[in-house]
Length: 245
Ligand code: ADP
Image (cartoon, rainbow, N blue to C red; front, top):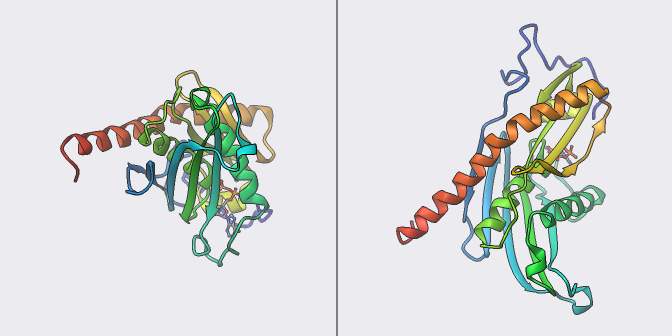
């Protein structure tokens, strides 16, 4: 969260820099099956974010001492390309990407029937090609489609969205400027069938009332986002049925 407050993020009509109302989502598009070599894949374009998720597995976990005799290990690896941000990002893992990889692995694991695949590993590669705030949630939402595309049995999708506070107002789906210069950022992901929360993080401060407002904005958007995930998958299935593109 930035500390500068000289940038006006909400105008006198209550509209945001990109013209959205507080509860509006940025444009969101998901395409499943974008990579031929992966077992499952998806491309998400959410605002200015462009992120590819590629899934491999379940396959035997390696090295063997990492194997869990009761369930598959889910290993997500989040990476931002050096050219994904304005200033070149130093390549390779850093504290932020290691943390994001961990929370995304845990969120995805709770959606997958891991107990069906003892000793196995499911690898989820999340490559941020262009970053525009909310990449962990966009990457997670795409990964869940890629896992379904791989035919891996799931309890449900993982569907996420971010809300936050800018210019003292709670808004949905922060843009990059809002993320940089706003006062709080709250990414949440759920299993939409029962709204069980599988990821929740918060950067900055919200009052209890603002927190309630932010979570209900997110919960209100989840069915729409989940619908986009589902239709990405069903159009992929239709393409396969008709013998490819
Ligand atoms: P998220 O992308 O999940 O919102 P953060 O809140 O940590 O995660 O980051 C917000 C945004 O800040 C990112 O989406 C990206 O646009 C930008 N950003 C993050 N890390 C870097 C970096 N190392 N260099 C430049 N911009 C970055």
